[in-house]
Amino acid sequence: MEIQPAGEQEAEKASNSYLMSLVFIMAGLPLPIVNLIASLIFYFGNRKAGYFVRWHCTQTLLSQFALLFINSTGFWWTASIIFGGEEVTSAYISYLLTALIFNLIDFGSTIYAAIQTRKGIHVKWFFFGDLTDRLCPPTHLPS
Image (cartoon, helix red, strand yellow):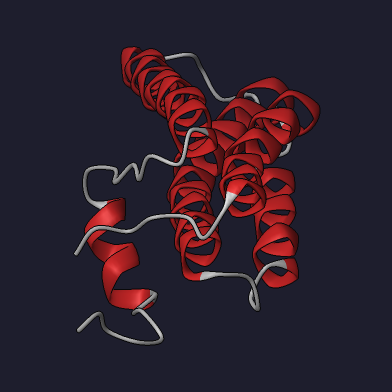
């Protein structure tokens, strides 16, 4: 099923769900939960919006939820090295590099999705798109 925005305003709101997560990545980088809370607030603020907006808010929320686990592990591992006397190991360096790659992929995907949804083009991410389809069913099916 092809998802289209109902109008210019709906495309802009859907795009803002991605832009909001980018802004909070910059502000909340040291604390991973900040990005998830911001996405959650935006999601709840748009629960009554059109299907296109709700779908994209849900996809953004799911991606931020996944990154929370990745970034929290890196955050607490780093804190244990700084404050707990743990040693820097090759496993730690590998994990940080992997987390960095995931974050860069999310960052690039978010920018791309924000631009495309602003144009009214539906963007479905790998894994999160299928999960969003299951969690955010259309309120009515096309005939």
